[in-house]
Length: 292
Image (cartoon, rainbow, N blue to C red; front, side, top):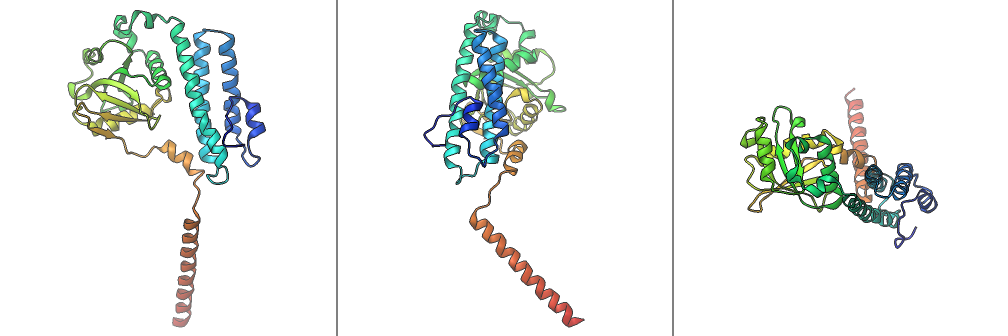
């Protein structure tokens, strides 16, 4: 595989191009699913379930590519392979943009009528939230958000997202539930982080009372349900001050744990420490023999 090669969403491409020392089983399975889902979507032109199934398959493919790079590729030995696999991310993004346009062209009622015309009951539905998050993830467009924090059970917090209207509407909708005080409510614009796809950025319309608490509880809320797409929050206050969630993500640690490579210097340091331990052990043993 050459660095100039372009990846293809195809099992045949991967199995014929991958190096023999890379198993790539997870990526192969993800490519099979994505290839099948995209073929089905093109066959059923404009069918919303088929389009959404293709989007889900692409999301799983993106995860498989990431894991393959981190767990199975050596940075030096597989440099060209990594370069080619990295190109999958742009390819997947382009495919998702195409699919999202197809969804819009399908003439969904909520797109035509506008979110302002929808009942509060609609925007509180979990399926609607999942749909908005999928849109946010695939297009990178800003959406209005309202977030009500449940301090006793963060996983039961309430996130609302809409395309149109004003974010204040979501604040008022959450307020009317009677479940949240002003201190536990925040609202504004939401957008995916440009540097980390697992981070959801909240551009606040008003300053949050306790940003660290919003980050902590928001993290627990997002990680409680994989359908929520994101793992962390970043807060941008009206004045521009930014609060980042620096808490390590166990999901990243799990992936990195199986593929961590030691540098020659680290290996040499370990050898020296072991040699020093052996020397010290010999000394202690000799001392014991003398005193005996």
